[in-house]
Amino acid sequence: MGSLSNGLFGGFNGRVGNLVGYMLNGKSIIRTVGHSGKALTLPRKANCEKMTVVNAFLRPNMNFIRSGFRLITEGTDRNFYNEAVSYNKKFAIQGEYPNISMDYTKALVSMGSLLKADTTTISKHENGIEFKWEVPADLPWRNRNDRAMLLIHFPDAGVSTYVLSGSRRHVGNEVVAIDNNLAESRMEAYISFIDEDAREISDSVHAGSLNVKSIETEDSYEETQEERAKYNTRTDKTPDTDKIAHIDSSGKFNKRDKNKTHQTRHNKKLYQKLSSSSHFSGHNGQNTFPAPS
Image 1: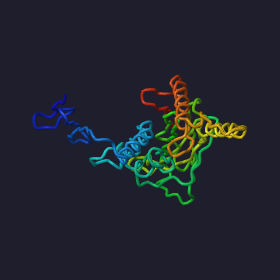
Image 2: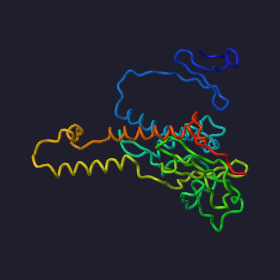
Image 3: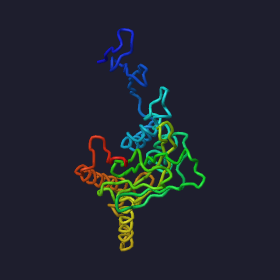
């Protein structure tokens, strides 16, 4: 049920029939809600898959991208989250349906005109993950005190750790604490800079990756070796019924479903460990730490 917040001739909030009203950047917006009974075409299926992949990446980073895309949408009818989805869906997606995935090296978690980070690296540190960035000898004085915004995304666990106000740009490094349960999980790291007045921000830069060898890849390799061994020890031409059961329409051996099940079980166990951690926030799926003073 919708409610009139500004009288009879003002906008409304909520749903009335197939209309939805809400406020966006101080303006009253009304949209229709429709349902199509038509079967999804291949392009529409691909579009839905892209949205699913991009949202899975962005949602754990909500607080970070709120700061990262706030300035680029300020004073417009655009929303920070929609802006982030629009960019990453267009430029940070790889593969063809149904094998669509994120290209983390091309993803953006902030957008702006401030000077970007130069030559970045990440590495394991006794207190977490250390970010390093090059400090140019000719760095403009006005950029020396820009603050680093640092984010580590863990794709397998679907959570992120971030610092919104880290070291000053001229320092050249910062250590971000992480949950010990995530130390061996895949990591995709990003760095941005924001000026002291929070009026300018830079495009984010993919700072590096750690633990990128996935469990699925290891399992596929081990099972392939096992299948080869079985094939080499066979002395007859009887078809391998176990193998036939996994042959897809193209004639290729397909272990996708088994690997997906294995990965899902792994992710559930990891999430359970994180949920018991003192630093993990289950309500928003984020593992956050206070910014340094």
